[in-house]
Length: 122
Length: 107
Image (cartoon, rainbow over all chains, first blue to last red; front, side, top):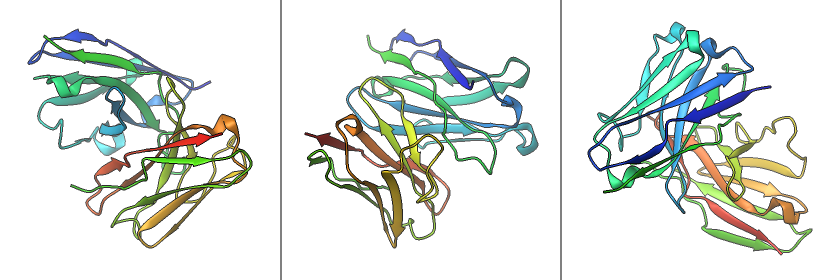
């Protein structure tokens, strides 16, 4: 059974940092591209970024709204993807979901975690 | 920045057909994906590559795309289909974006 479990959410002050984790199981994590998507309270979905697999040199891409502040990394030995968030702003308050793109012949974002709530407030 | 435009809301009666649209300049060249999100839950993929249905998604869900507009169709909508629906695609440069979402009410 495919499972994605986010952790690390919480309350942080503006300008602070937080690191989210997403632990994967039930599929071959190392071949997958992993995505982060967020949803502000009462708002729509926003793509945050993705990290590709080793074959693609672990290349990462980001939305313009977080580029330069957020960093996505992964540890294939731990089947975990991370989202390091720095210089946090109030507008970064959201539920953060991780999702996968398993292989090119499998549709992207077919499984999602339950989400981790990040609240940026003083 | 690139935008995908959806109607904010749509209301249909049970058994009617619901059609949710998504418009974007790059859609003639990029696939559209559709997600269903029920209150308090993570999104679920219901259509990929414009018109393909993942396993486990009921046949009443279908998708199409023509020109700059894609459409998610729910034939014979049921009360349990009440949810927010989001389209998702890429711009010409490859940047990924979600539409603003459509709140479907079935009652």
